[in-house]
Image 1 (cartoon, rainbow, N blue to C red):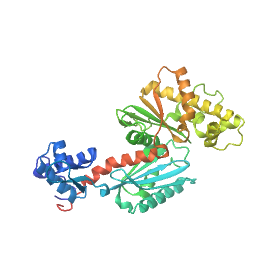
Image 2: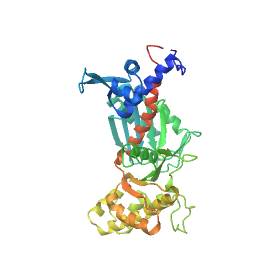
Image 3: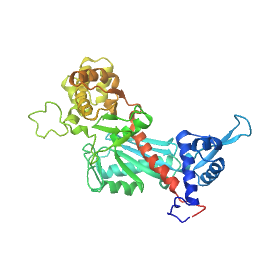
Image 4: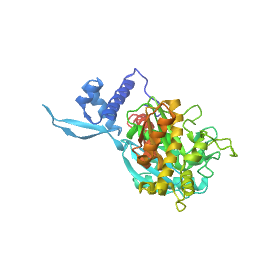
Length: 397
């Protein structure tokens, strides 16, 4: 077989590839198995499965992990997909922190790094992301060339035409044209840039609070406000990739003295800076972060509890607006502020009962600050698993 050319369907070589794919998909979907188990589950004959396993093992896609002696007769070899057949890199770019993780094809994280975001320009942030990614890959004992797919989660809406990210005001200079090219030059081919709230939704759907839920939203509240939407089990981006940008929803009773047009009002009244401003107006003049306000509330401070209740009522407005349009089965709350569900949920649910007849179930995200990375890894794995299967067979090239 020549490199870059797949065998035609219906030919012996084509059938051999189809059999390999069926066996590999069985192992990926249901876990380790013996040849008789795979034959039973796929409907292929044992000799066909045996040949497919030989081919897959030669290509580095499956490996034997032992033998089983259960049942009558001789023991059988147990196979699993080889997790070292390829690797993916996930990066989460936030205003406060930058996180990176390398995972093998089984989804196991083999290296992770986390550092503060002190960057004040797009150029500095690109360099920092590149350095953190390279360090994480090195910590995994790999080279960047070993990483098949790199998925970067960032605030904003990727624009492939302008090679830019729009609507990312919390990252200085991050909206300039050509930014995506700069990231690709630093991180190499196989780069995917996705909105961070979208990736958080993917992460919670794959391994978090929304497992098995086909229609839900993941609302992240921190430095900014965002939302990922999953419909029919698939991420929904909208016509221009901006679905879920609820920070731009006009808030109820807009200020008539505002010099703007109302865009961004939800983010203005719900995000972290608003929590701090409200706390200071309430007499908590020493607080510097929303984290401190919630810590005071957990300690029973009356003024801080009042700030949290107001935050919950404002958040309820956004949730009610979304619920009336999407009718989600579940709302997952995440982000630095949204994760404080023990404090937020009672006043949030009370406010929702007052303002809307639609009351979805609201839960805390299970992945915490790893939600975006979890979504990035899951997104990368879908592509990487196809890429390793489509690599030319070195023995037939």
